[in-house]
Image (cartoon, rainbow, N blue to C red; front, side, top):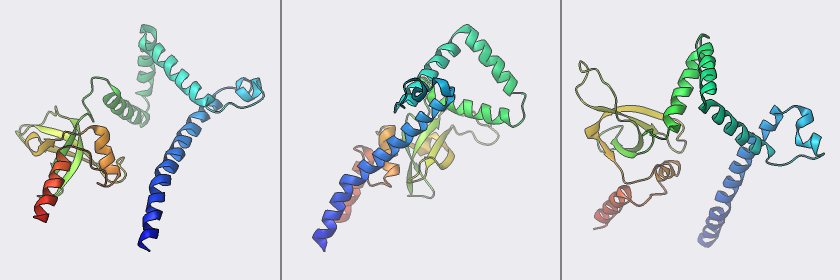
Length: 214
């Protein structure tokens, strides 16, 4: 029975990552391929060539992004985008959603942005209980009437789904920066702590295990 369990687990370790990878890639490709529907029916590949081309939607999506970026980067494009944003800013509810999404996208995608560039360790939700998080903003302006401490914004993701989590404002002195890449941080969270990258966390776990065994 032990050998059978061992073989089943070995088989899962081969097929499970492969299946999840294929399904994820297929989902993204199918999603981007849907952009081909933006073209008029007479200009779609199946109408022009007599057959559909897998991945044509991806090429179209990348092309649209490039053309939009080139247009928005020049003087005329920036003015038109500004007019467009002012028009949206006059529509209740729409302006709130648009401005929030744009601010988040600008923060995350800007090359000079420092958001989500550092993995940190914080003591949460109680003493001697630690969580891995990501530094979002280290330059917060706080009201001196509330606290004189220099607070930083930390995103604390949940596991195994890092798209949900908590936003904590913590003093700089209570935040430990880890020698870990953001990618390794997400791996640790998504794997529920099974995948431990080399660095401070792994050394701490090894030291704890050695201390327990001695």
